[in-house]
Image (cartoon, rainbow, N blue to C red):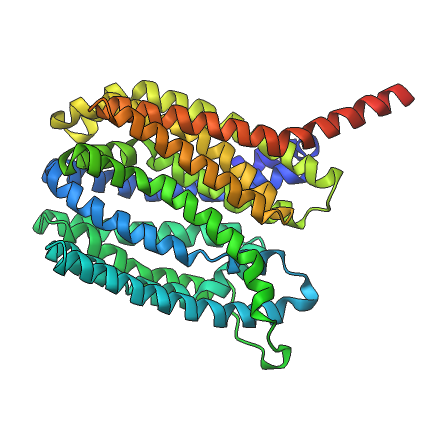
Length: 432
């Protein structure tokens, strides 16, 4: 049905809009399946585990995510934007750099796990973190193939692949939670889902190194990749550092409540925003510079606002009604918190569009600087709100600070491009 509507309105929408709608439809249908399973898992976790146990698992997963973000060294984006003539050499170089980098990360995470176990006497947390380091090996095996599929616009395949990983993760979590209510029941499925991701990546775009193409100087790849890594690391610090601040200022039990509310409030929106960025970035990178690329920016921006703003508003208003019914009466006090955190989805969507535009235009340093500003402002707002001792005020501080920073950055980076198009239209009208 959705496909027939796209075909009907295709002349009015224009090719970029059709591509975005098709990509979002593919990701959206896959996301619906994944969210049904994830919802069932979240309900079981909410009913089977207490906030302090959830908080312990959240602490481990937060440290893991902060280490894993260093995996996003930016080499994948180099594959997406590489010219066709040099693609084979770029892939060869990226493969070698990425394998060496992920092995370093694996060793680094094992060292962090040892510090948690022996210096801070968090033995179980250290063991879980050490086990999660195995994920890096699977990520390295499919890195090049995944980004070649993204370059080729295989949106449907990538959507099904991500959905498959989520389903495996959540189904295993659900099964373990029913028989073994423990933080390990949340951690172990992350490890078991990694081979599924690798198998799907290898099928998405078969590739093998081409020795005849040779290698590029590593510095040529790393110069651009370093800025992407910094931007992604700061983004991860913004999205994961809030857990550390809440744990440090308000305690592990409140972290459990916050972690539940954040996932219940932003789970669907975050996945859709990530899908939006995955679809839009290659499209902008493939478009010609100048007016054609600005047209893609304008149309995708309008589509993003039309999709995410109503979704965020509706979920925020409905939170007080569905949280006690879906997750259990003992989470009723978290319903206002869920409603507030839902509002952060608007800033995520605007930020994703800005990042896609800057990276498509090769402005990786600007993207990194924006991420630093956004990270400092967002976490600063959270910390100021947490000084009150209230989780609700901490959430308001995070949402307001993030939205303000995101809007200012978007206006500075995108406003000029949109105004340039408007000025061009006025000149053309005057000439006519």
